[in-house]
Image 1: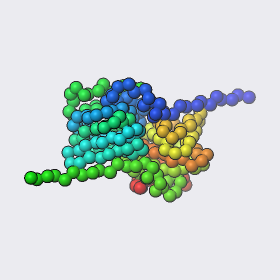
Image 2: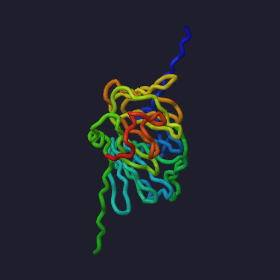
Image 3: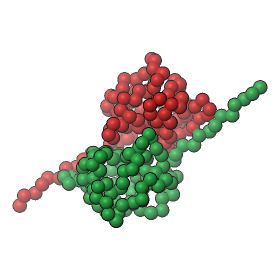
Image 4: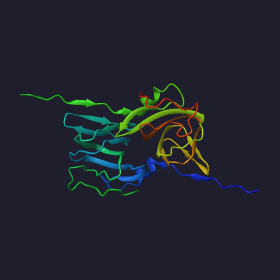
Length: 127
Length: 127
């Protein structure tokens, strides 16, 4: 009797992927959904003010407390929480202590948005 | 001296949203990212075979163990893990015990995909 071998597919473990991150502020792609990417990053301290004129940007916090400052206020995002920054809204991520987080955004979205500059990370790097 | 009042924005707490779910197999929208939606659902038992010809579908497990069967195998997804089912790939979610999960997919994606039928949930309902 002929039997067909069944495959066992492997899920993406966020903590295991996060443990592979070596540098702060360097997002790494872990999955794609159509033309969107799931990226993880570890951060500490202050980032720069920037916005993404073409796209919203979703943040899901895995570890630590992420504060995102806006020109008119802020949001504090803890593990198990998420927030979507609307397109065109200037924001500045801040982590008093190390934060590990996942971002979901279209492929090609750069971490510094329209601001650019020395904090711009290499884009589309997988881990 | 004029001072401007700063707003405190509220993050989306996944566990709190999940606690609001009343029925199994009824996805509820908790956030939007451009034309994509983040949906949460609680499920138990077997779903039906279906696929989404037009889109990939991302699953992130919050509680429990989600098995997704494919025609050629399966994947077991635990809390803190995710998996992206490619467009057009037939799949059947299964939960031996209750699972709470988040899905990310384009607005308008129906839970039963092209299969339709009595398990089709009302779409685009927020919680």
